[in-house]
Image (cartoon, rainbow, N blue to C red; front, side, top):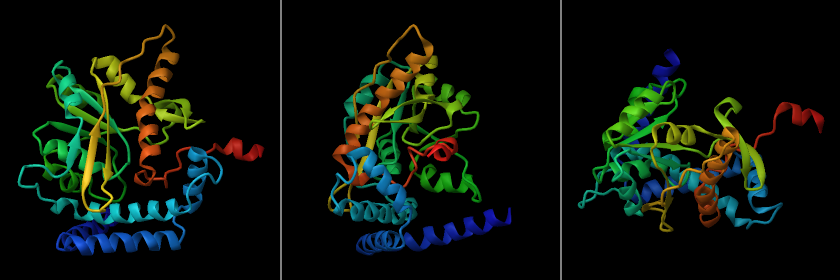
Length: 296
């Protein structure tokens, strides 16, 4: 409890201080943070391993690593500044394309499930949708040692985005979809086997959350991918919404789940290959089990 109070107090100070900084200084601090993280080798082994899996052993530009850390540093500062982000004069906080794909599925009246990932500044994806009047709910995890209600209000609530905690989320997801609202979840983290399915991802097997498939199947709601990315000027943000991913049916329930989860990863893989700098490569997406390590 005491640790949570301390960390939350530090967050409040960080939000307040960063919120006062001009754009040029935030960008400079973000770039500096990226350099520091690279110099100290923050999760560098994981970054290099993931790059080898996606692009092949050493088959990627050496300058890519520096840009990945720069992106992570910028993201860190942007997250601290995000509670202070004001909507632009036209009511928007970021550029967004593909809205016609989202509108098309909402016309069906069963809501929409957006699958996204830790690309660009993903909070901008939900923030820019809410700024346009869409009713958005984000599926989130409880974080340790911090006041989750305070954090969610700062990062999402102030932008009109509701948070649904992952634990016992189905009822709230169903309620939101029945009101033709949007639910958003990320699919790029490795899941536990009981929560996902094992499928190919960039040519290597890993476990991916099956929740989007389960929700779509159970509540008959359409699934729509959407990803964020930062402009090359390092200041502006964009999001693109892709067409609906149609449900694949199969007589074998396990195979049906695998086929649908696999197709959810298609647009994510295409996006990562197009914007490799924009993904958080520090996550151990393809971590080997302890038994596999012992056999080596």
